[in-house]
Image 1: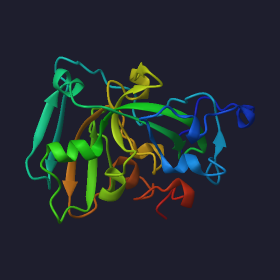
Image 2 (image 1 turned 30 degrees about the vertical axis):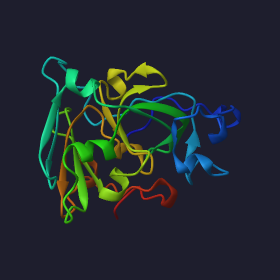
Image 3 (image 1 turned 135 degrees about the horizontal axis):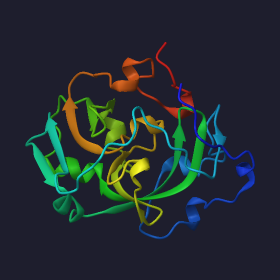
Length: 221
């Protein structure tokens, strides 16, 4: 298992915004309302450890493309300039890595997954799962359509008001707060909508097919 580069043992007592302190108009993830926002088996960190399967890819924004295919009513794609012009939302959520650290109180900004689905004409009735593709050497991850279409899920391009750094998945990454962070695909390149579940990179290597941090769905065995 990969290990985070740094975990701050003193972070447990550092203040973090409560949902009622978040600015008006921001979507607040339901899990931030929990009395204890750190899931079982996790420790809080103030840092943002850098983890990935094989290193950050080189992303040429002039050639960047994001596409949606499979069980949608019409396939769509955008280049970087077009994607930046799509309507945006802001989401306040916590972020839980399967390697046992949690970073609380993140403010994401990007395009809602629900809106992306609408731009593709909606998903077809038989769609049950989504497979996300990253630009990092064919990396993929899977998730149920319900988690993908959750109110707090988005393709983020800003984090805490700043463009996403390359090491954290910039220029754009999927954010699905209800699941462990490996499901929030870095360097997002596209989404495929499926009737049957299909294991992604880490799922083929033993990680859980769903990945709920509150149920400690770390591994699939």
